[in-house]
Figure 1 (spheres, one colour):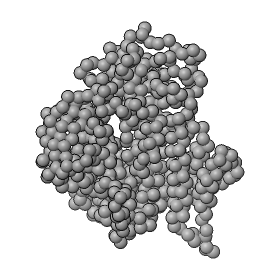
Figure 2: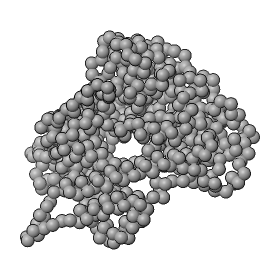
Figure 3: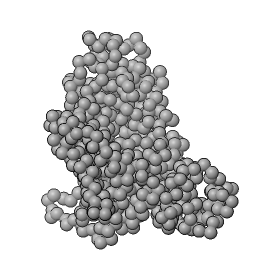
Figure 4: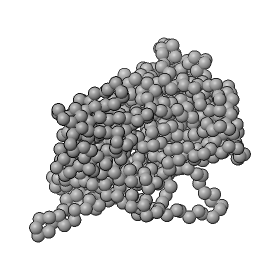
Length: 640
């Protein structure tokens, strides 16, 4: 797939594949494979594909650069529009994103609220358009009567059931057989879910389709673990909705609701670039109120890497404020008539007025409490205090650390507290054109350096933090020496650390006794040491090779040998679920004529989802425990 082709709406591609005959569907994958290489961009903005002498497919993108209607894709062959050429050209183009949540009408008058209005939802930086929509509305008052949960209507129940069936079929097929036809069925079900008012289910289906495409095209950015997680989320969402549950977190919302927040005073924490795999780029600036409430202002639009790099100094579109995002990250705003979404995003309504304020340093401003709490406590509270996985994965925590050194692909640091564990620092975004990786590599060359880190915990890895910004530690001689205008912090996604920002090498402290010049000792990793990898491998085998691959893998090894380590480690539930999955994958009853007596993939999908859900919970528990693990004796940091 070429990123230079215009994106195509999922429903347009699904309809084109559905109109093909069974004979043409078998040829669709081969026709799509080399289609993008022959695309020609015409002077009038259209894109043409030549198939022989008599067939010319033309895509006419709309004003937004997207093919959103069937009439925007034409072919000159006699079978058009039910032809293989047209479907192959549409399948070679990237999928267009689902429409982002539209802002609901914002209040025109500010209604005074208590301190911390909008603090019920912390500010979350979008990882890109298409993420799980935020839930609008505040939690019900526990002192008042509980509001009844709204029931799903018949259209929503039917759409959820259809999406479950399409997802189960795709899981049973796996990457190897998950070609254009299987993807089209998912896209059709996703479009039906959107029409029925289930935007979260639609977004989950689109992520699975993009993952299948990435896997089949063998892209370097593809990770089988990510596709496995996408399948788990899709099956969970569709399965629960099809059962009749109407949790707003599962249905999602297509309109982002803003409520009146009164007058606010916010100070900048940091800014970070946003770069999605679907061509969106921009910046998110994180803000903090004096009472600890978190907010954000984002500017994410189509444009990719260039947009993400340039948006760091783009003007802030809020109430006529004369600040750019770089100034806001180290400054502040007084907002009158503020409107706030459920996730803490500030709206730019007509009645909003904003006035710049001087910035506050991390050490003595409203951000100081962020660094006063041990990282382990912050992560434990984060995992226990929210049921929204997306909110937990995007929250920011702060801590003071001492650099130990580089170990593999990450930077080892030691929290500046007694008996604190070793932490791993990984780039918040690994793109080589963004300075995250370069900045961490430079920091790693200064063992013993004291840092104040503001980052996002990686809940899929043991004791791992993805720093967004760093700063000096007050009172420590061997720490960063940033320019005064940076106000004591560097945004790792935009600011590039230079040699002048570090103390001289001769000021480095002496290594601790026993540290020695030997190889760097790795931090303990309960996740890697656990036998849960056997369950993870079985689940990923199913995603890659389908149901048949799981059955073949189970036949090759006796259950006692495969799942004995799990039982000996006390993980009996994981062993039982894995064994049940393997047995269900191999259960293919046939009648007297050799035909499948139960061709439905529902039983296999439920068994896979049960094992995947248990694995995710078990791994999350091990990750939480890693934040309290003791430091190994061979990894003692430099003396302070």
